[in-house]
Length: 373
Figure (tube, rainbow, N blue to C red):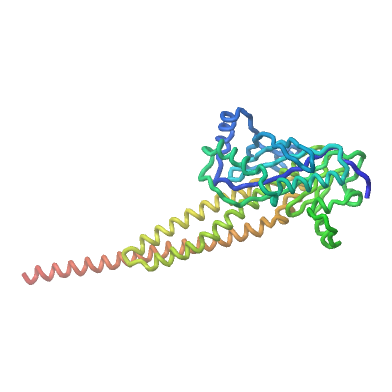
């Protein structure tokens, strides 16, 4: 292994939360400017032409106060940003700078960040940061929620080494596995190969390796597009997980409501069926609207390199699998809605037939009475 030093870099701890049904991003910009006196920006990919790869609805990027972190006896002032997506997700990023470190020291910094503010770390600043955002921006949120679902990702970025390096050669020069796995114990050769399977290079001097909860990026041009794309993939994962769990909760309730509607008396059955059908239709419409927004958040057309990384991240995070599960559950709800609508229509038809027969009988009875009189 070569003796490389990280001249400049950063370790990004990313944490995402689903905080609302949807977020009015224009209102976010106004509220943040008035309440905090700080400007906001609409996110775009810095090094990619808009026609090649762009956001469908650009999220809003806001800056929060720095947080103070104690990592391995060193104090860091870490900048914090939050990116808000219109489908109700906020992505918090804490950036810990890395300057003039050996590779071992840089690896130790990554582990220190993970142990102090990672998913298994006690406490951490995430809750307070989330409260700041909710308190300031609650008027911009539609149906805020207190969901406990969250996603996290650790991104290790090196921008400059102490000597020229070819990106493809890095796995031979330094051991990336501890950073990618978070494990200090030696891993099997198969596990090491699996961790390094999803790696990408565009130029000779860059490298991207993506795993389930970590990524390593060597990018000397300081572009942030790859880390932004990984954030988008995590935001999609979180949104689909949220609606997958929501439908898991709703399906048993739906079955119980259907049973209750079918137990209703003949006079009440049509109204019960119609009311339940409307509820299910509303649920389908809401879930479909938000999942489509999440699914189409990033439009990829011409940038093949970033598209490959984006699609690989979606596969690694199992976004297509969870999205398919949401679609299957929505199909069940749609089928139930159609069946209930048919039953409601049939029940109304039966009542009308009964009413017509009753009216005919009454008319016959009245006619007979008149005739006898």
